[in-house]
Length: 112
Length: 112
DNA sequence: ATCTATACATAGCTAAACTATGCATAGTTT
DNA sequence: AAACTATGCATAGTTTAGCTATGTATAGAT
Image 1 (cartoon, rainbow over the protein chains, first blue to last red):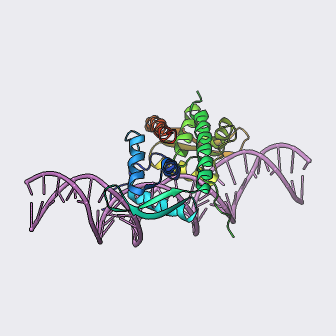
Image 2: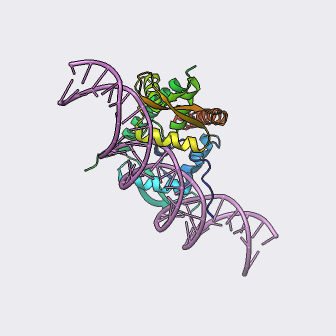
Image 3: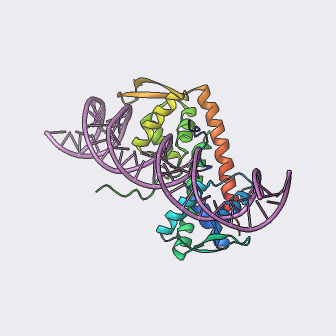
């Protein structure tokens, strides 16, 4: 029996944005991206591998990231992702839309 | 050819919360809920009927809302929804989780 | 008469994120 | 030497929310 999906993502639809943001720091491999997000969010966000890698592949198809095999600091092979110019542009739009959306939701849920 | 789904919801996963919040004001029918959310969000959020009614039904099954047929002020039949005690409790948790999630995301995307 | 706004509802599709699983290797522990 | 843990990538299959599109129906305005 598969486990009941009790709690979904922190906020669906924001994963791409978080990943792209991490890649503006420096090119990273998937595992590193997940670690960074987890640490920066103070353990509030944990990116599942089954979400992470499909997302990276989608974004590669869309031209927001590129990737190449390389060596991780620990000497293991790893695929390093790099944000593209189009990716940066998209990230900017996503962050802007996110802020607007949050503001809009706050207006609604703060009503007395 | 069906239209490309270009922009999804403002923020997926928040619809139930918004609907429940509206019902804390007063019992409303579906159409009224959509109008209220649209106005309070200053037109930023538009709730599609194909999202609204399924959501109301799901929440009814979960026991967060009840409903009954009645008359709208314009004299037309309308199904009025009312938030339950369980619904209020759930709403509180949702709002709390939402705020935490937004904070966590902000921590990540505000990194320099 | 026709059009617009109000009002509910569902069938069918899409896409994101999840669970579960598989593969593989470096380093540590027993 | 064997086992375990952490690192690392990837995909198959499922679930679910929200969407598009469509149908029904009626009050009020033009």
